Image (cartoon, rainbow, N blue to C red; front, side, top):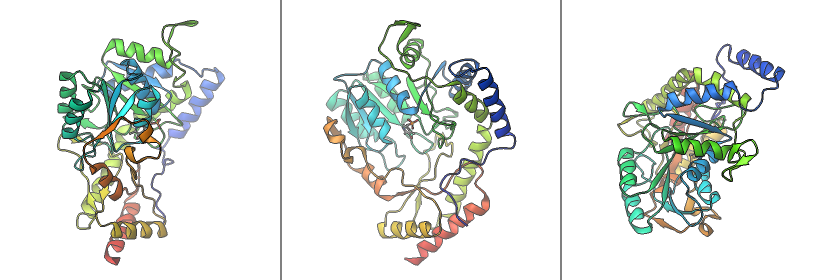
Length: 373
Ligand SMILES: *Cc1c(COP(=O)(O)O)cnc(C)c1O
């Protein structure tokens, strides 16, 4: 039986009826921009993330750009970025006119390597840093990173596209961030019916600037205080997310169970299962295994392909190794642990309501591949 890497069609009972009613209702009223649904969503997001303000926007990449621009990071500013993350984290820095410095990642938690981070701050004196909380958790030393940035006047943006619903020290991972972001891309933990994103902060000035940037820098309908752009989240998208967020606890629980299943059943294989640092409760975004023996990795991948089981490699290449990144980069600080993750990582299927049968098929297939070598 084939098992997809991600299946977004496993809606809860009644979900599609609610959504279709909402589409009919908003369509009849031709209510497509702004309105009650956007407000309702922003209130729910602020509560979920334990921030005073949530500003929705068009996508998670824009959210990072909005956060950087809200902090007045732009032309000629140096900004640190982890060497292993999604390309959008790097891209956002370049798009606001700033210059990225890549910093090595940690093999333990996949976040930015703290020792290299300190060296980088000392060496290049960045105005800001964008860190990314990958795989459904964050860095073991997140508090230390935040504190170090405050003490050294480095403006910290936290790209939380993958960690919605994750807890750090029993609170939302986004609490206590200066400014953080998320993505509502359909495959994320809180996924929409298209693109969407949000910026979270408890600083009213940053929230005000972020809001302004998402809407052409408007001060009134035809008055402009900033050059922003159009990055509004539309009403239909907000309406979908308002329905989805009610099911989020159940979806997260199902993801966590799938991940626990893999950890439990793959413990005796040569796929080393990555686990979140001790202060976290992960949101179950994805399964992460590292296969140091590259021949074995290729055997496992071939076996999964021929068995029609989806898998991922998040991510197959570091930022500093991309074809065009060098021309935008100032420098790289630290070693090459990021590349080690990229070379060895394999992600098995995880999505809400994946069945026990599907999980056992994946595990059995992986085990057979391990024995084949
Ligand atoms: C998905 C993702 C983004 C980008 O979000 P979009 O909504 O697709 O623009 C940024 N950073 C990370 C780490 C992501 O996983």
